[in-house]
Image 1 (tube, rainbow, N blue to C red):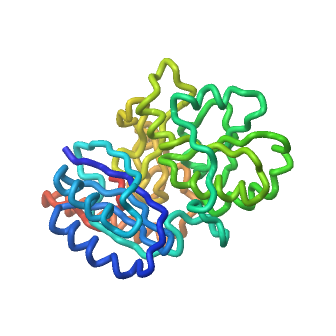
Image 2 (cartoon, rainbow, N blue to C red):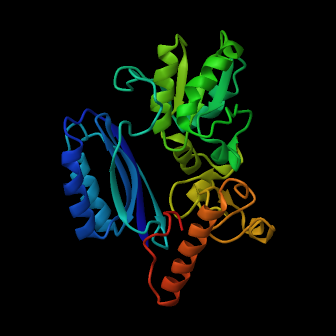
Length: 304
């Protein structure tokens, strides 16, 4: 059984590049894989490995400057969710693309899962899903607004075009684990919205804490690891990943004529040109050869 830890912390790092070698070395010793993003504003990512290895990584990260109160959530998986360990240096640990937005300075009011249903049922509250369109497509909260953004950095433009719709409304926002709402609620406060709320711990905490019979969640929640989607109690959902576009698909979608393993699905059949599809086919051939040898192909995209 593999332990999965999704984590983030907003804290100033003077030298993000100087943290990379230590994180990679420890992960290598402890058999931990996944992806960590490190920037001047903090750290974010998902890692997986044996229980002792995850404990060692979390202890190392909590010892970094300002990370003693690190936020993380855990789950388990029977198969390794990631092929290798990556530590990437970024400008932002979650990319909104708006200079000056700082969750350490201002953020929306946290709402625990047990109080969320009551809040979003109130008539003057508008509920906004801050996730990408393909995530929203497989599940969201009842009555939530879908901005239909392809990337999180598209959210500010959507807000500028739609802010007039929410005049004199309180705004409740949610995302998978909480990190996007740290940025989006801070951004809305900077835009003059007076009352902004944030589901504490995100959808994952809600699905873990709230019984299905009391839930206002509909569908599954996309996750960025080998489980692909989860439901109430964080039980693994039915979705798989298209390794061409990295969007979730259902098992029955593999019977559609647009589907070719590792090359295309009905969501991305027209997105890639012939040379790129040829590269996808070669990658898939190498994966099949590695599988036949009983090995794991490290070039396989994380999530499968």
